[in-house]
Length: 279
Image (tube, rainbow, N blue to C red):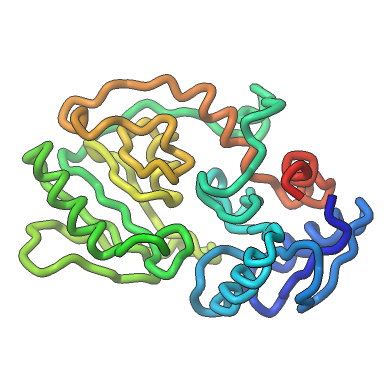
């Protein structure tokens, strides 16, 4: 078990303060020393894996600690209840990270968090292509623009339906002109820090490995994601895009409900109980 952890408060999102404070409190409560801007701890905690803006310098922290074989705990805004639950994982925030969410499952946790699986409310015939930030660790190993263009071609191979592309609000990466897609611009939700409107009333959603894939699956919209997505266990196959097969999402929802925590739960150290075997 680690005995010290480094944290870098100036490299966190502006809304991170109460979450980080709860995290540090739980560390100290469990005998883990917390050291600000330190480079020689047993582990580090960073906010997000988006190497951009305030978090750009987290890339060097991540690489330094990982090169030494030390774990990096990643905290990020949640996909389940944005602004209320927060992801905490080791080394990444998609399925390549470790959440400990496959063990000691509380089947009632979704209900406790107010989560529910919805039926598919399809009102639009198009396929939604929801993209993510190109500077994230989640897509660092691929040419993301090429992935977008290849995915558009793949959608067209399996269906004649219109394609609506929704770019990440802070990353307007777009395919080449003439791709024949419709662009849906995200709109900020008033009264929130960084939430944007999104609807899954489409025939299906395609996403690489970010929040829209998870939310789409919860909404009952047939979803295609990469194996690195937390939504992959309920992803449909490409050959089923035109006529999607329903999947049982009950166990999946119970599992991913253990990937995120409220601020109170973070302060209680619940995250540590799930991650300690990787620390």
